[in-house]
Image (cartoon, rainbow, N blue to C red; front, top):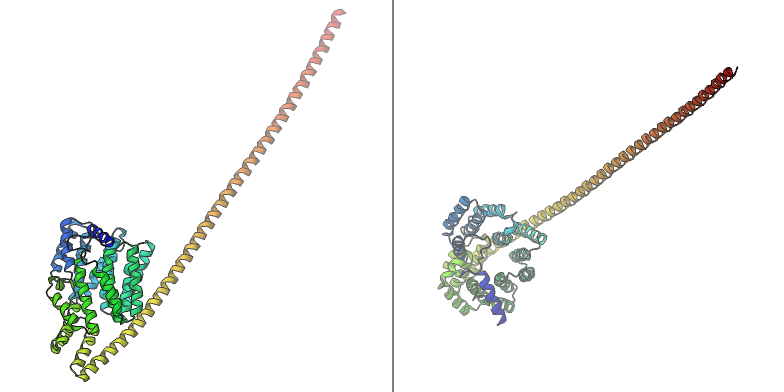
Length: 437
């Protein structure tokens, strides 16, 4: 009960109506935020492109990066859903340029970067996503922002999942959940729980999967979109277990929910459609749905199972062989890219070490220069003191000589005066003697 009260309080603080996880982090005006929140609720809807253009135009007019950032974050999921991957990349690049140096927009920046990395992983570009995740982790570590560490571990978990390292994926996603709690970002927990549930299914642990999806469903009253995602995860669990009655019940409820098509991406819906068609024996319809999937790997995985069910074993083998070739080529590509990443990181580490050495040398040079300047100043001071002392000594010598000369002159004058006095006395005596005669 206490947990639900706390969750309710959290929801009241961060939610706006149905757009529960959509927070006005960039602090734009209320009207723009409401339009943006509505767009995020139906993030894969092509109609968002017009909305994004409108908000971006306002950003140009106001010369305000915040409006441009909101617009680009609305555009990117649609470009992904439309398979316009170059446009998706350019949108992400512009967003990174707008937000990369702005510390006051870090949470929004981390959230967008995580979303972009999710798309990269789905498209098989996991090494690019790994570079982004490591940079995100480094930045959040330097700035001591737990929410960035949460997103970093989440991306790495998704990468391991794409490489079928499900136990490593679980470990990283659980680490992400712990950082999520440290960041007090409970609104992100249900999505993490759903990802963990899906990984437990892939690892063959249905009990663990059920426990995590149940944890996610606790948040449904506060985050309506979680209900759709949890139902899709339960459908995935049911189909993996072969519980087709449960699957059909969930699938029918999703089909009747208007939020389902707005909040779920096309590939996720196609995969559920394929399971639905296969459960009814509508295998040609399942093949058509498989052909609509966005990635070659997904198409091969689905068509292999469908052809096997149709007992067209040559086609099934062909799809499986192509899938294994694809996995082998992806594995080689991943290994090469990971080696390139490692090489780049070693090079960057070497550059950082050289920069530190250069910095140390510069500091030593500055210190030596300071000491030399201090020594020169000190020597100049000593020299000036010596010159002053020498001048003083010379002045004293001259004064002493002048004083001695003055005393000698005074003595000479006194002697002359005595001589004159003596001569005067002699003259006076002569004058007296003459008068007596």
